[in-house]
Length: 301
Image (cartoon, rainbow, N blue to C red; front, side, top):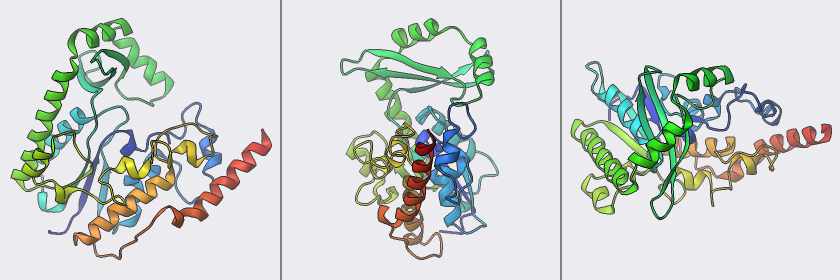
């Protein structure tokens, strides 16, 4: 592989640094919890792509294209924007893809003149219900209110979900889109890896030669499995001893995930560096600082 100059990361809030929206109302305590740990207090810095950037040579640009709430629709749209651009240089570009499950449907709003996300949940029987809708989650209160005022009311979107979304059909559409974009990437010879494998049958994994695209996250191919064991261990909630309740990756999980991706790049000969071979025990000093901050906060309450 030729010299990589740009790395694009795509995905959901787990790639965006969800939970670490420093500066937003109600999240002020984050500054105190994560004081003196050596990382800039921004969502980008606390995301695993932000941590990966610190591990790579300075001439490699890491561009985080993920966003909270969004999923496969937005990722595929942005990938196409990049790889179909006439100035795209595939030899200098590497993509990391976090595929998501159902419940994240991207729409275009004429009122906003922009894309928006419609989030829904579904039961085992296939019944759907609205979870949320917005241009972007975690904007300022003023920006959120301004956007919502331009959109139809909640009942419109509730009816939309109820009357148009069939889970089996949505799954078929998503699988078709996934197969399309991965086949296109393969055909074009684009460099990419999967941080969270897509929801497709094993036969398609083999058909598309995806196994070499997986990353070894301590015995699993799933970033979420390493970052959130049992959907809890490694979360912000666990890392802050419950002081800040949020199920996204804690900073230690972000650092650990970025170290595994760094090691994948070393093994593949993409970067010239030594394997880190880290696990959670390597971050005990960092956890001690966080625990000390938490104790100080609790003593003031």
